Amino acid sequence: MPARAARSEFEELARHLGGLGAVRRELVRGLPADCPPAAVAVLTLLHKYGQLRMGRLAELMAVDMSVTSRHVAHNVERGWVERQPDPQDGRSRLLRLTERGGRQLDTLSEATTRALESFLHDWTEEDVARLNGMLERLRGSFGDCGALSAAGPAAKADQAAKPDQTAKAVRAARAGRAEKADPAPQA
Image (cartoon, rainbow, N blue to C red; front, side, top):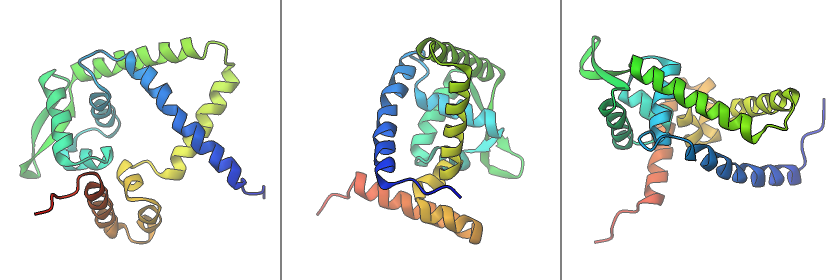
């Protein structure tokens, strides 16, 4: 079994991951003005998971319902997403990617692919494949659900042992994050 990476390697990785913000910002510059990154996230998740309730979408995006609602409204106004009554719960609505939203996502994907081809023009196919593999492995180490990532490693570890407790851990993590970001005014 290979030796575990040294602490200094993790420190260097942290620096590189911090630098990925610049890569992301450069790719975001290529998005149409009416399609900010959060709108793309909504489209991508609906494409990946199919119809979703607002609460599940908020969980996958690891943001509050009010934030998710604004992002969904933006997509609905442009005809990219539609809300439909949930046949299993008349109080709830299901979100669905429309045909127009699918075309928008295809257009955005093509633009991102072209940008990556341009920036990485001197990379070999093997280099790109190796990076893809390592990024997939990295994401797998953190889990696929943004809500679990927001809750932290403890929630991820508990997921397998206590799946019914996962939602509680996510809510607790979000509550802690919200208190740090927006403390209640003192009377």
